[in-house]
Length: 528
Image (tube, helix red, strand yellow):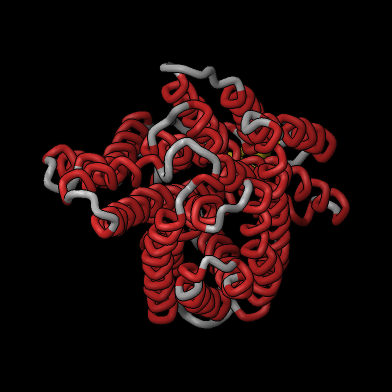
């Protein structure tokens, strides 16, 4: 008897609620921190790169450790890992909120953002695997649409709540995770989710290779805006990181109990969905960071008003996520994924055309459209990819998918951040020269201003020329996002096949059987 058939409808809904509250912290943290970026930078005296690392360190840690978290969940028990992840995440959040001022600030907040990411990496694959095992294949699209939609709705509250909390103290944006964690833990105890897991040895060699490869390659892209592309250190970091990921591949295919069963990529839909997700995630998380900065710098909004600015994105996201999930259950993944990517591309393109007018009213519906496109495709693409795994590898498949997503998000933040800083520096240089500054001094001043995002004063003190130049730099980033989503739409259109997946196809995919020893035991997870 499968877990989903053994569990009543009321119990399943309680399990779903528990998992939503658990992962809500990871969703909230992706946006609520973006709202507070200017305040954190001013109060702690961080450089632009330093505050970007306060955001990116969390994403890097998630990307590097998701595969590890997924493997832990499948081998030690999903409920254990969800519970441990919630506790680690909440504790790290508390420590981020206690960041001291002074020379220790940057190292402190980046370190505990890494620990937060580790907690999320342990928690998220296990939570998603529990939802997938709890619901039958035909109900899964709807369940995961609710999962991602409500989590997205809580994320939508995050920027608004974050805006008001930031006006009191930015530290509260981290402390708000603690009551969410308490609710999640209580619901986990009450709902008692039962899942299957399979004990196996852990591949620590693979863990070291993928963590180092992800960290070094993204670090190279991140530092390119500071070091410059001519600096050999930039290329060396990217090249060494990429080389380690190649080594990781060859090590994994020769390892008896690998961190990732890479044979799963032979399943065409799993491969294509992960390519689509990787391309789309170059945009999805970075858009919150850049939109928040645009609202506060170019439009001169307060932190709470910037939260409302992002709410329009989530209005589109949450509504479209429900439609996309139902479409997945009834017609398969191709249609919602292709439509979603195309809508997002159009939305970002139209949004980009309006940002230099410095009027929020002219942008809001295009922001909704961009959010709707992302909501339409993210849930179905993620769900369809995980559906391709066997019941005993849902955590691992989720770990792989989330590794791809978060690695891409980290790269997107680094690459698009480089585009923003470069464009901003060029435009500021031109503006300062037109105001009479000598070329050399204008270039130096522009380099400093582009890193400081307007200095340490309030939004109202930022000069108009700086706001306009920042808006033009943001326009370039949004146009790049539109192009990225157009590529995702093309990949989905050409690579995915029509139709609904059936239970037989799901049951037939079992990478574990190809590599696990005959005496490995499958175990139910009633008490983990």
